[in-house]
Length: 233
Ligand SMILES: *Cc1c(COP(=O)(O)O)cnc(C)c1O
Image (tube, rainbow, N blue to C red; front, side, top):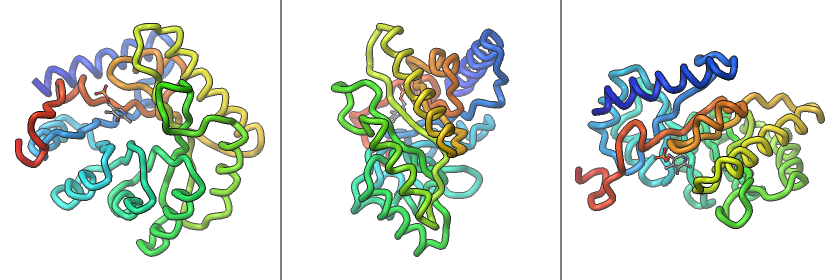
């Protein structure tokens, strides 16, 4: 099933890119493996996907302990200060920074791991439907400047989640906002290159609006089975 899913996904990404004059190799596919067992991750790896995303810090920690060779881990979920250490240890890129407190903790933990932690700032582009993420451009700009002062953090861009809705216009507006905010920061001297936006239901629109990283779970692994934990499957 995973082979067919990946073929279909890649075909679709190619097609969307062609229609909007982008190149498929500008798009990084992060396979969101939450709640899926290591065996499923191994299967996806066989087909050349090497980026994997998790949204729970402990699950990332445990999976990183089980599998850290030949793949790149991303942390995409909400981060609490006391769990930052797990994300910093395992993740090449943390997509979800949305407070000064978490930013400072990442810098501290990255220093003790002897690494420069790559991060994205999560923006709440959909107001009420998502309680996480930065809501104002001023807040974002403050954090972006703050990150420049931290030696063990490197901010590469922005991330957002569109609301779960059939209204494609609403989804598109969220992605357009994220791109504009990135462009506005870059006009103030930043050099952000990454836009992490697009999931199974909306990656087509995200790519059309400039996404560079799409986070895909269901379209790769199938529907998640929450009746069993990932390490019991
Ligand atoms: C689960 C999740 C995804 C992937 O969702 P699908 O709809 O299964 O593709 C992407 N981003 C985040 C932050 C997630 O938590």
